[in-house]
Length: 393
Ligand code: PMP
Ligand code: GLN
Image (cartoon, helix red, strand yellow):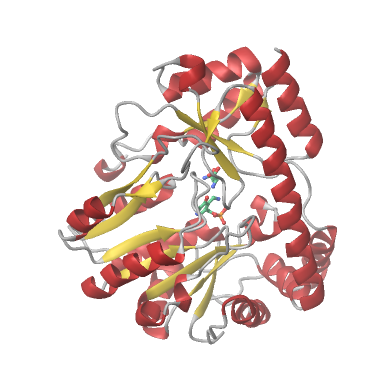
């Protein structure tokens, strides 16, 4: 393998999914639903498989989907992106991130990343020869219900890391793995720093439709002072509960889009036309889309509440979960200072429940990090089985 990939091992998501299969465990590790997304979407895609041209789509995506994305983003954020020059359809948010990072990072460039962070950021930055500079979200030192309970920024730390300069920042809200939804005040402070450095911001908004209680998603594209610097990334996988769709999109000003499209073209050229056209068809029914997303949110909120109550009864201290379909749990009270990787492996063996250790989301994990991540995008019966496994075995 080329030297720049030397330090990248097999993905923890694949590892935990394989371990889960080996022990016939319930997989709350890798974030994918274990139920079907909307049948209507499957039907629309199937229809396209049988009737569309099934040859390469235009590199930047099928026009009907770019048009629907434009309507959708305008309806949720009020910001208008031009389907021809400012929207690019990608092979999932993963490819979007990879293409965008490789479009903007030169060897030696500093890229700010809030960590814990989705692993792909570090891998793509390293591939481009950039230097990922982490800014810590500090794990809650007090459980929810007592005080706080959220993953938080230490602003003096943020200021001193940012003082080193950066040309790109990867921002992710709602945030994987913490479940944090960044507040207006946090976004304002971060935006000021972005502006000061004239840095491009990759705003990974794949969980944009999954916020709970009174927490609202604030898209960075709605912040006027940095709008010209924002590359906004979405995923149909999260929005429609089908991670197999591998279709996402990037909205960005035309000058940034031009650069991203060069790398996208060199990476995958285009993504499958039938998925794009099927998505465009269902997204064109605005009433259906709105009610589907509302129902999905309600259903995830109920699943979150249920899993929270199970995990609390099992003895975990939980962090707040304001968005995404992940919840982080502190196992210190159950296993002392055991490493999170060991604890997660043991949990599969002893209780047949697979999770993700949070340290894998760090460039240099802190010495002690007694946190694991549970995904609750699962059937109610799956979550009931987890309750049984954690509470009665
Ligand atoms: N960003 C984040 C924060 C994620 O959790 C994921 C997980 N799937 C992705 C990007 C990649 O999305 P996709 O499946 O559309 O490639
Ligand atoms: N985003 C998913 C998660 O955090 C995993 C995606 C992947 O397997 N690369 O669980």
